[in-house]
Image (cartoon, rainbow over all chains, first blue to last red; front, side, top):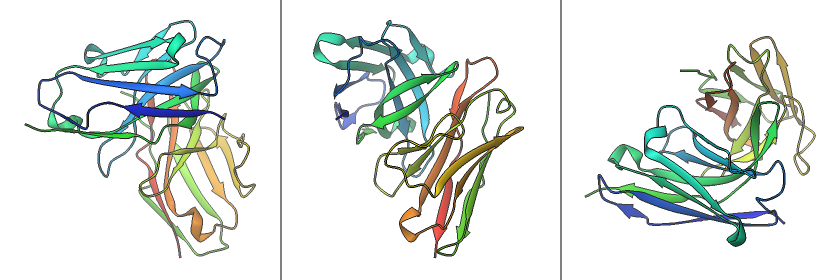
Amino acid sequence: QVTLRESGPALVKPTQTLTLTCTFSGFSLSTSGMCVSWIRQPPGKALEWLALIDWDDDKAYSTSMKTRLTISKDTSKNQVVFTMTNMDPVDTATYYCARCSPVGDTWYFDYWGQGTLVTVSS
Amino acid sequence: SYELTQPPSVSVSPGQTARITCSGDALPKKYASWYRQKSGQAPVLVIYEDTKRPSGIPERFSGSSSGTVATLTISGAQVEDEADYYCYSTDSSGNHVVFGGGTKLTVL
């Protein structure tokens, strides 16, 4: 059974760095083809893809946000860590981690965590 | 930047067929996937690689793609299918991956 769970602060101040951890089970990020992605959703708005890391430690970032994002993995702990610098109130959103599977030169997200709401406010 | 365009809302009566479209210039060459998100819940994959249905997703859900338009079809929509639906794909270079703006499906 594949499960993912996001953890991290519910509240961050403007200009601070957000660090979120995705802890997963039921698959290994050392298995060829596996990847984990971060996706966010501001209240009442659409989903936005942010970042991805795969089994080979290859990483991909949203073009518009890549200067602020970092993704890394700890295979032994079954965890993926995501950081976003210089947080702003517009970054208030529910942040999801999801397992992704490659298809062609893109991927799809077959299992999702429940999400964690992060509010940016002073 | 690349965009996928979905209608903001679709409304059908129970038992009718609901069709939700997703338009994007690269769709003739790139796969689309579809996600259902019920209120207050995480998204769920309902279609991948344009037409494939994950296990556990009812057969009334199907996907197709023709030209620059991918379509999610729900045949015999049920009240429980009310949700927001998002398509996802990438641009022709593979450098920009995006979700559509979402479509709110109402079944009543």
